[in-house]
Image: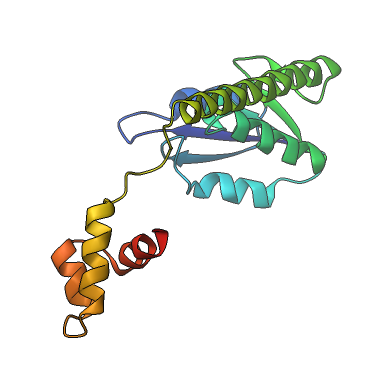
Length: 183
């Protein structure tokens, strides 16, 4: 059975183009969502995933209608494949139920993995170069050495509560304890 999925980002858009294309390509049942591609909640897709069974094929009008990112798309299609469910994208002519479609999909997956590794390598090289120049990553500390010393002196005075110290220094309890512990 061919099961379709359509998604539009806003209510200003129309599902008609996608639905017509899915019906023309033989989809017997069509699920849809009106949600941004990055939205975590897509009830139509969730319902589709509960419905679709081994031997079925999920059909989308275009790849970007299914995945939030290339990694998410690949994970979703691999998940379908593990369950014995095929995948077909009409616009990109990808059909994982055929050997050629599987090849194209695996090439996409390999390119995505290669891209992720390149990003990781560049990030690590950049961090290493910054550390070599004495720069540390992360947020700047709320308290400098002088502020930490002030906080310590205030903590020695038992008439001032921790809450009052935090209000005076405009920091949280966690920041106070972390800073005092640091030096």
